[in-house]
Length: 397
Ligand code: NAI
Ligand code: MG
Image (cartoon, rainbow, N blue to C red; front, side):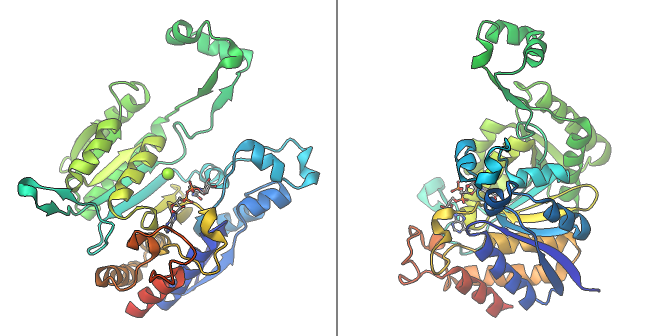
């Protein structure tokens, strides 16, 4: 196969450390690729007034596949303060470049697998009958709609007359908010479209079928959020009935799901949800398999643009340590998802096997795996650095 070009976007904070180490692992595993760096993040907001420069969008459009570390987002006012003086009078408003990227390329399918690694000291355990400690095997893949819903960005504070009047036509708005002054109202909408809802549902069912999961669970709230969750549930029922009769469709409410996931996580297979509930439920499951150091994700559009990133952020408090201490496994796992996506499954399998061996052996563990606080001296106290963890994976390869 010809050499691949991958856009690498380290972003801010620990993003660079985990991405650099991941590329070393990819090289060592024999993945033949060239990496072109894409600018994204806080530095570009400050210097250029744009955290997602057009040149980065062009690079991704050209090469289609990207690895992303993490970015830093700060609240509106702070963002304005840090802006270079020449941009201050331009009325620029900071918005998260990763959310921008998702919307620009319609990266509507977000996939977040949460699988237990044998021997991970952070695995969820519970007390079983007769008082013994049980360690259930979690093997869940969350499909999250990534562009719509509550994170769609259609929102107002002190809405314009037009918007306000439109809302006033809804009897419930009129009854509950009709006498609240307009200036005191903030509105964030939750919009679902049929096409994108169908896309995420179909990807979830297809994944269940391909990888042998017996159920797809819709984690929404159709009994209360009747229009959006309700539509999604109805569509899920239709898709299951017509195309995936062999897979069970389970319908749980998101709140109950958050309770069930610690009571019986081993019962779930594929989970599908809208944007915010998918975000929440995937963090919940990630907590059962080791937390942010292990939580990986993929997001893609229906026309082949795909970005792979760990779920964690830029962890600014660790960014300036002389030796990086954070766990690179979430980023490495995200890169494995990229390899699966571009059909380099053998290399992905090899890396996952190496990671599993390192974890099971238990000799090399980053500070999070040792349940330490992330102080600069953790390496002196026996924790592996980011690089040492990558080295351990490379040694197993
Ligand atoms: P965070 O994920 O950056 O860090 C939270 C805590 O999790 C860290 O302090 C650390 O204890 C732990 N942690 C994170 N990654 C780890 C790793 N690889 N290994 C070991 N421990 C790890 O979230 P936080 O502190 O809420 O946000 C920091 C910045 O990151 C903010 O500016 C936020 O907006 C941004 N962010 C960016 C995301 C992205 O780029 N997709 C996602 C989440 C937050
Ligand atoms: Mg999240």
